[in-house]
Length: 228
Image (cartoon, rainbow, N blue to C red; front, side, top):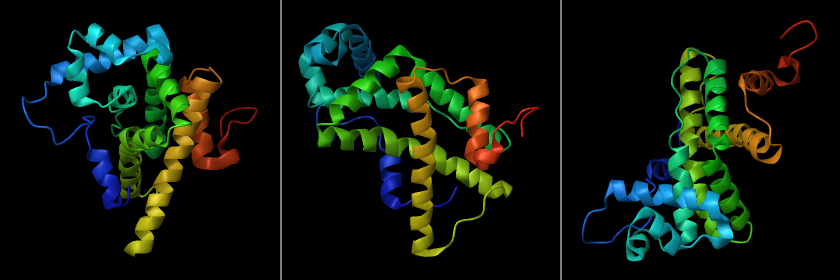
């Protein structure tokens, strides 16, 4: 799928571990998982307004200082609790660009249908409307990291001859980056709107219709008498 700019690669490869540069005892992956899971469960139960670091610490069975060694505040904690869920998304090779898109659309829809994902994502997005730092953290920890799927999908499609190769040189790199941003925005935006705004399911039929529209425009949609 085309070359990705260096800064984007760095962000996509960055893990969900926020507070770097600290010394002392090594981080425990099991403790991190317990904290992030407790954060999502607490959000479902009590909501953003009543969520506190103390609440999460009690649910995770750790000291509050353990949380603050990892995350400076609940904004950072909740974003990372959401980010690890999105890292579960995969793009196995299904043999064609159409099949790859349909597959990731269904995965994404299923992820957003989970109460823990839905509640946490809606909470941080709402809070980010008045918090620029939080908005940037969402971009780097969730949005930029998941553009890896767009990069992989485009690369496969180009190898199969389904999409043209990117133009070489700096202008080609910039064009590829713009294209990846647009592809991500269209796919993610449609699924988020479908699940979180309209409250409708992302099922196999919707996934096929969306993919047909995405790849073929309005002429790619089904017409009376059968699918195009």
